[in-house]
Image (cartoon, rainbow, N blue to C red):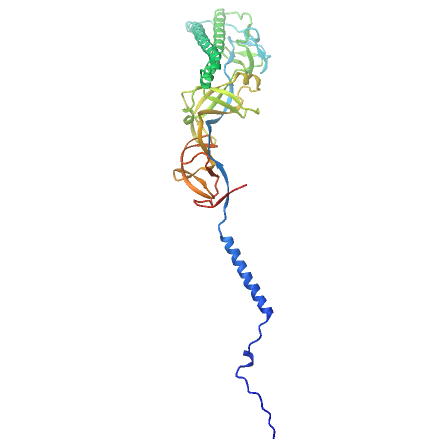
Length: 420
C-alpha cells in the first residue's frame, strides 16, 4: 500500500509571511523624505537673518551757515499821512492809489475854510506852541541831516579807498563787504533825513496857516490847496468824497514804493543771536531767485503774540534793508508777504553729518556707523545745525559712512547692505 507524504506544516502564519519589497513603495518613501528635508531647509533659510537695506551718507568737511527762518512783510521805509490843515469843506480827491505825486507841485485837494472861531488865550497858546514845536522839529531835522551827510561822506571816502586797494589783497572780503554796506546804509540815512526835513517844513507851514485862519474871525478866506509834501506815490486814500472835514483828519497816505524794508517778527531766543549787518536771504516772494537784504535794526523791546496753536510767544521786530537794485527791479510793494533767512553763524570748514543720520537715546545723540557690513551704534557730540547738516564735535571722522534714516529693525551689530 502506497502512502502519500504530506509536506510538513509551516509554523509561521500565512499573514505574517514577508512580502517581497516593492519598487513603487520605495520611490514613494524617497519622495516623502526628500520633500520633508526640502521644507526643513526652506524654514531654516527663512529664519536666517538677512542684511537690512539702508541708505548711506558720508561725513564731510564743508562750509556751514546757520539761519533763522521766519515770515516777514515788506513795508515802505518813509511814509507820510497828509492831514487837513484847517477845518472846512474839502473838495473831492481825484487821485487814486498808485498815482505819482511830486513834492510841492501836485495838488491833492482844496479846502475852503469855515468860519474861524474866536481865539481864547488857551487856543492861542496851543497854536503858537504847535508852531514852535514845528520850528524845533525842522531845526533838529536840519542838524541831523548835516551829521548824516558828514558820516556818509566819510563812509563813501573809506569805501573809495578800499576799492582802490582791493586788488592788492590788503583787506579781507568780509571787511570789504562791511565797508561797502556801511557806505550804502549812510546814503539811505541821508535820504531819510531829507524826507524828514520835507515833512517838518510841511507841518510848520500847516501850523502857521491854521494860526492865520483862526486869527481872521468872521471870514472864510480863500481855498487852501493841499499839496504833496514829498515825492512818491499814493498808497491809500482815506477821504475821497467831498465833505466837511475837521482839522487833523487824515486825507491820504504817500510813500516811495522803491524804498522798501522788510519787517520780520522773530522769536526773542533767536533774535539775541542776530546782529546788525547780518546777511539776509529773502525767499517765497514770488520770484525764482532769492533776494539779498541786510539786517539794519533789532528792536530792543519784545512783544507778546499768540501763535496759531494758542501759545504765547515773545517776539522781536527785526528790520532788514532790501538791496536797492532788487527793490527797483521787482514788483514788490507795501505789506507783501515774504520769508526771510537770517544768517546767525557761519564757518568755512566744518565737520558735518546729515541731520537725518542722528537720533537720540536718552539725552545723548547717536548714529549708526557702517563698519564693514555691520551697523555700529556710536555716540556723537554735536554742535550747530542748519536743519539739513549738523556740526560734529566728537565721534566721527571725515569719510565715515553713516546710516541715513535707519529703520527700527536696525540694532548694534545688525548686518546691513546699501540700497541701490
